[in-house]
Length: 490
Image 1 (cartoon, helix red, strand yellow):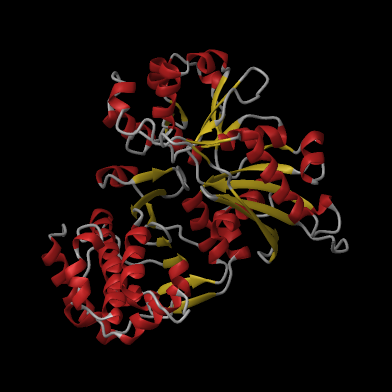
Image 2 (cartoon, rainbow, N blue to C red; image 1 turned 120 degrees about the vertical axis):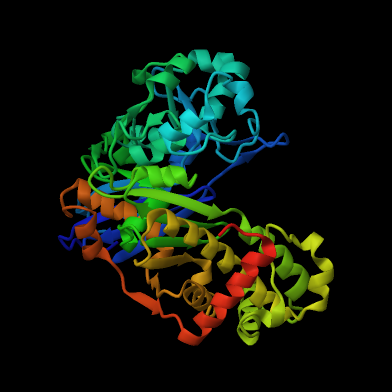
């Protein structure tokens, strides 16, 4: 433990689907330490995925304890905020105790059954109200299944919430949800910042049986004595609402204006783009987040879903090493050895899964396969970015890249060349979501005036990848060929 310094510290969480990560930061954005735990998912044979809410809370407490142990006195920590993924449905009784396990958004028991579960619900009206297309694997579908298939749990439930809401109640005694994560619940009217009375009537629920809606960066309470004992925090530490994971990361990386892009590259490549008009995002069939509205931009999101899984099949089958060289290192080394365009080889992972492309892959060199995989993913991203730019009419802004590909010496360069724009890689990009929660914790406690002030105060150094003029010209021609070859929409 450090000696007391008189500094003000903040804790920010990024509650991911498979892991929870948190950072302890000072008010200048210096990360003192970080801690993480795996999320214990209860997977069943029939594709059900659930989460034990009490176990989940205990893991959150263990992460907080690890961070608190690094400061002189717990009272130096002024606030804690929770950002992260969402969409895990939880029913609570009149004493705020879980009635059953939370249903994870990964659960597929309701997949494709939304029309059956809610025959009176118009999916288009839900999308325009909630900001996310209505599908069969998120809370609105979960609630339909629970009402029809587990009437005992439904009857014992007093509050209909999500797992993150429960964490706030356990920390400060108040059941709340921020407007950002409430989007994944589908019952919010985003523009009105209220619960959707039409959908509540279909469910037979009243607003008082849901969590309170608050803006991101709002104080929702103070750590209770019971929570202080469980976490090591001082009683009275402020608890501040966070946001969904990608808009949280956008805050900490300075992606605020229309034309800016945050590209989070991992299992899926997700683009978060601020937009001035919510209607623009709806027109593009994107996921919408309240973000900085009504004073600033809305947020829009689109993704190349599970693209890493599709790519990894090629890597294991075509370029795996027998000499012990790590696969990702070999992938990057080989891609750097191949020329732009991979000597005519191109791969569109969604149209050409490995099993359907074995013959072509067998005739190509490992280096060209590695290069074609990187270029193909970037070309698909360029196609979607171009579509967004046509919708907004905005083209100049910051591009920020986070995620595993930032560790590659060649992939960010391909991205900069194909988009023909500089790409910024933040030093703290690995913790972008958690640092966004730190920023929101600081806003809630008055340490930062707003998002812009918070970003200027905590921003990290960046590595800038500039596009190369000649390679960008070459990639423009290669991209046009790729679009035509695979029939991509222009």
